[in-house]
Image 1 (cartoon, one colour):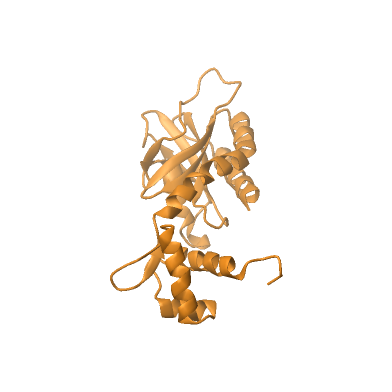
Image 2 (image 1 turned 30 degrees about the horizontal axis):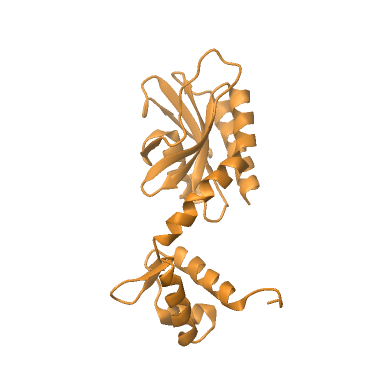
Length: 214
């Protein structure tokens, strides 16, 4: 570690990263082993993080990510939205349909960025802040598909019809390979079916968004 960095801050951030990567939390001993430091250091790190609600410990003593990270997370959406907008604008203009970036929010899919095409006579209204279950709609289904092994994702995109709005079809692809981000990029249009080339185009847009976020 260079002289310009803080060893304590680095360790605290590593604790948060380790806890974020597990669903079951970690004990002081487990954190000590993973960090390569003694238990006293871990206790001090956890106590400090607890004061800021970034870490909580259950009755069994296992440390988990605390609700304080939600306050930080709210500031992430504007940054993600800004990075994704160029790819979404290009997608909306190319396809002539409303393009969107959707992220996981608990058990729901949350639209955090929406771009409408400029040249069409009509298009589906789709608003930032729109929520729906992960297992309904192309955006949510694409996110779930992104959790599967590569060989089980099929063509890399998901097509749906009428699941969220009568007469509307959707196409979406997961945003992959971005640490801390689980989402999808897609389009929604008034059509009975979605042409195959649209599926391939949303995959390209999802890859562009992923590149912008790395």
